[in-house]
Image (cartoon, helix red, strand yellow):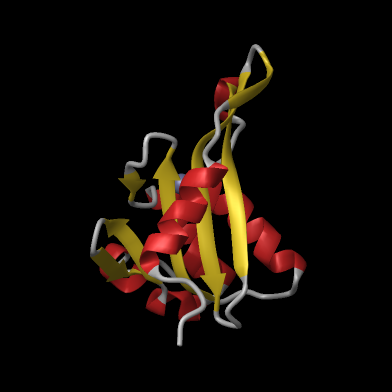
Amino acid sequence: MEKFSDEQLIQKAKEAAKLHKSSEDVRIGEVGCALISEKGNLYLGVSIHACCGIGFCAEHSAIASMVLNQEYKIKKIVAVCGDGTILPPCGRCREFMYRINKENLKTEIIIGKNKAVKLKELLPHPWN
Ligand SMILES: [Zn+2]
């Protein structure tokens, strides 16, 4: 029995996506991310966009939270904008999930309402 349904995970990511600014150059939380680790734990993240491309995606901060618990395998992940739009991960995040643990090719990625794919489908020919 899953602790979180897809709908609940999408809702958690949307709740994390609350735009605020720490300075005039930085937008925090345009995108929120929720992931379930292989052990069934929930981790949240937010995007931080700063000038000169020095920010990062919501997936990155959710994964950073996960690794604090020495967990590296992602069972399921979703990224959502504040308006509820579900976003597939960018190319960098696809590669990042793969690099964190290669078994994450099995990660289920929610890319739309009632639509999920495995990371392997989004990253069919990983670079080694
Ligand atoms: Zn990304």
